[in-house]
Every structure is written in structure tokens, then in C-alpha cells.
Length: 372
Image 1: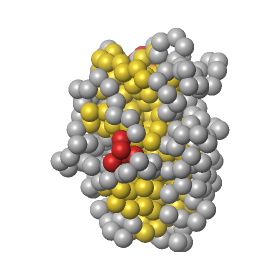
Image 2 (image 1 turned 30 degrees about the vertical axis):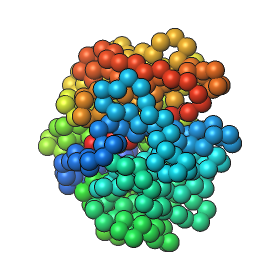
Image 3 (image 1 turned 45 degrees about the horizontal axis):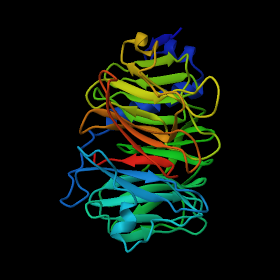
């Protein structure tokens, strides 16, 4: 049964939690209070401005990672679009994997792990305009601080990036433990890693507190709540009332403990709701998505979306498109050249299937990058 616990920042509340967790929640409260509203990126004019990008790991050792493009309203994908626009050159080699990406201003950043660089491109044309390199790099995640500066994680370290000169500053500003995901809100940085979460004040790059979970997330809903998840726990913080809510999930969130994947947790921009891929009862990869609607624990009683038999999600697997208010998923039937890939679109309010695009070849889609 799903249980909720609602508490306030009082001495009685502090007694119900460990001191480390209470400090963590207080730090999150400060972050939510200081955070700014998210803004949709204005897509520049060009052949790749009306749609989104799918980042593919590729077939390690055989086919290099690639970038596919989905144009809104289309019934197919433009495969290997980056190579098409860059004289046949792929964004990374066959010995590295493309795992994450984001758009900051008028630049698309494609992040490769396992020694690869960060390729910088014009998203409207997909033409490469530069790259970010670091000796011994194992990049995982990147987040914008402002129009001029970003942070990027590599292995155990976090570095700052000068976006104008496309330079990674050589000395790390923070060292953790296998940094996974970065989330900037106001003057603070949330860095999740194998051992939990660090809340970092960016004025001096000091950790306010380290808390052993939740490591998946973080995402924000329209009412300003920030959600994080880990195992069978979903935690939210309300800056207006200073309440925290902990929801115990019967079906825990899925995470890949063997390789890097961006968290399979997304939020709606229309509803105060979050979506996550559930850990399967058997097997490795998930097959179901659950939707939690604020104030309605019963929304988690049944899956919101379930894949057809024989398919599993791959990579992050689950994405939310703010422009269309749709859930977008990437799934596969297996790991060979004869298996199939599926890109699906679901109504984010009802879970109704809107469209399915089926395609072949070994792409291994890891992530999706939207203009929003």
C-alpha cells in the first residue's frame, strides 16, 4: 500500500527524520524557494528546428553513436542526421557512447562517456561548431548556470565550462563519487551519484549536505514542487507551505546499476504530476510507466503505460515533450540486428497511445533532447 507522510519544518518534524535527512530537506526547501521559472527555448530557424533529437549509443565496437531526428507530424525518423550534415562524420567513435545531451542558448551539446568529448553543434542545422575535451574524461551530465557558464560532470568530478570559449576549466570545483546527474536551481547545484545526493552552494562550491538518496531526478512540476526518487521512495518538497511529502512506492523506480543512464523520471508541464519507469519484478529492464498525481496516491495503483509483450525500455526510456504534452518512449525487442526499435507517443493526461514508429537496426537509443 502506498503511504504518505506530510510534515512541516518544526522541531517535532525534525524528530521524525534523521538529522542528515532533515538538513537535506531544508536545503531542498531553500533551493525551491530560490529557483527561477523554467523557460522554453526558442528554436532557431532551420531544417532541424521543428522536432526533437534522439541520441543513440550505437553498436559498441561496430557502429558509432548517432543522432536521429523526429520532425513533428512525421511517421518516420531521419536516421544518422548528424553524420549527414557533417560530411559523414559521426559525433563520437565506436569505442565511446553518446549518453546525454541538452540545448543551452543556440547550441546543442552531445555528451559522450568512456573517453569521448562533448560535441557542440548548431541544433537548427546540426553542423558541428566545436567541442569540449578533457584528459581522461568520462562525461555524464551537464547543466547551465547562466548564458555564459555551465557545469559538467566527469567520473567523480564536477567542472565549470566557459560556454563562449568552449573551455572546460582544468581544476574541478567539486569531487564526489561517480557523479550521475546535475540539476541547477537558483544558486544551488544538486549532484546525484552512486552514494546519494550532494546539495552544493555554487558561490563557494561547498556541499551543504550529503544525503544517501534519492539519487534519481530531480524534476519540477508547475506548482514549483521538486521531486526526487530512489528505490521505492518518491520525495517532494513544497516551498509555499514548507511541507514535505514522502510517497512509498510498491513498484520502485528503475535505475541502471551497470552503466550510466539519465534518470527515468520526468515531470509534466501541464499537471502537477511525475512519471517514472518501474523496476520489473523479473528481468533487467522495465516495461511499465507509473504516473503520480499530486495529492492522489491512488494514481499509483496501476501502471499508466505498459509496453507490448516482448519489449523493454532502453536507455533513459521515458521522456516528456512540453510542446505536445506527450510522453515519448524508446523501447526495443532485443539486442541483435534482427530486433526492432519503437518510438511511441502517449497522451500525458490519459495514457492513450497516439502514435508508434517502428524501425530496425542496432541503434540503442539512450536519450532524447527537446527544445524545451
